[in-house]
Every structure is written in C-alpha cells, then in structure tokens.
Length: 311
Ligand SMILES: O=C(COP(=O)(O)O)NO
Ligand SMILES: [Ca+2]
Ligand code: NA
Ligand SMILES: [Zn+2]
Image (cartoon, rainbow, N blue to C red):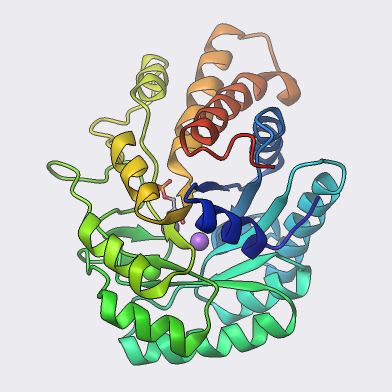
C-alpha cells in the first residue's frame, strides 16, 4: 500500500530501527527494490532527486514527478507492504511544488547551504505548504562534503544540536537530516571514516523526531571488484563501514539514504552480463543481472537495518 513517509518513520523512531531510502532514476531499479522489500516483508522508501525527475520528465518537473508518483503508486497499491515516495534533496521550489502536486508522500527541502535563519525560514514555508497537502517534510542542518547534486559543499559543517532543537520547534518539520560527517558518492573519506556519534545522540535527545542519515552507502567491495573485473574504474571507492551505520541506528537514525551502493551493484551486473553475452540485445535480458545484484544489496540492507519483517 502507498503510505505517507511519516507513518513509516514514526514507527521506526519509536522502535529504534531504520528504513532504507533507495534512490531511483528508472523502472529497473524500482522493480528490483520492490522485489527485495516484498521478499523481506519490509516497509520501503523510494526516493528521487531533482536530477531523476528532470531525467524522467525530459526537463519538465511536473511530467517527471508524475511519472514516478503514478508508477510507484500503481505498484504500491498491488503490494501488501507500506511503500512511500520521497523527493530527495529538494532545492528548487518548482520541483518541490511538482512533487507535492504529483502526490509524493514526502519532500526534502535542503536549504542547509544557507545561513541558519534563512534555512529555517525556507523550511517553515515548505512545511506549511506541504502539510496543507498532507505531505510530510524532511530538512537538513549542517553540510555534507562532496557533491550534493548541484551544490558543491566545500567541507563538512557538522550540525549544532542546540540549533537543531530550535529548528525543529520553529519549523514543525517531520524528520531531520543532521550532518555528522558523511558525504555523498563513492569516495567518502580521505582517511578513516569518522562520524560524530556524540553529536547525533544529542540531536536525538533534543529533537525526538525521526532522523535521516545521508551519504550512507557502504560501497560493498564485492561489487566494486566485480565491476572493475569487467572494465570499470572505481579506484579508491570507500563507503561508511556497516558497524558505523549500526551505531547510528542505535543512536536514533531512522531513514538511511542509499544511492551509490545500488548504482555500483547494477553497474557490476550490467558489465558482467554484457561481456558474457555478446549476442544479447534484449534489454529485459541484459538488465536482469544488474537488477538481481541491486535486489541482493536491498535485501541485505533491509536485514541489516532490522527493517525486515516490519511491514
Ligand atoms: O544521501 C544520499 C545517498 O548517499 P550515498 O551516495 O552514500 O548512497 N542521498 O540523498
Ligand atoms: Ca544540503
Ligand atoms: Na532525503
Ligand atoms: Zn543525500
């Protein structure tokens, strides 16, 4: 069934487990993710960036948002697990409006590159707007290093727990993404992975709402090596160690944004299949192995986060 993201995350927050939010750009990833969630009897959050909406709508935000909202709703209504659709890293108000209009379960307003007061003002506006349409809202405090779609954040600016308390009270936002040291993409840490667990603990104590971990891909060596065996060049890829993710969930993270892990798994399967089946030209066949690897990563993460069996 198609549900509001808040429903899924409030249960997770109460019982201290987490739900992965998997990014998609096309039908193949959606199908692989849903198959994995059904097999694991788990609630699931599907998310699309503004870039994914631009891609599916060929530049038209409402066309792209409708493509994903109608496709996900259509699948969700035929499944007996809770499925939510979320706009990831909303920055452009046109895209946020399109997602709300198309029927997304929730939207992220990411104004974390702005000054605190400005971020608070913008988020307050979006919350009023979204709540009037029954849509829940995620916001972000602090910055992740690395490329955030179209905003290059210079360095990690970690969340200030006191500011988080004020921010949540003033904006009435439904869930919050506190920057605690992660970053997006496949090359996360220069040296050792270091997340600020103390800071995360304080944010949970002071805000008591569901929290989101961005940049949470672990970059599984197995699929990096397989992709490289068939010609990919992912040298130096490094993700968040699984035990760090587990610690974050124990401290109150409830939504775990995962994009890079699925991209690498799909890439490995596609490269492997194409190089072993030079005569194949049916996309329903040559995408299959990549989809199976995506499903494998999905099921593993659902087990690992204790989402399995919570549907
Ligand atoms: O934060 C993410 C995904 O992060 P990864 O690149 O670690 O999958 N999406 O919003
Ligand atoms: Ca941000
Ligand atoms: Na998000
Ligand atoms: Zn993110």
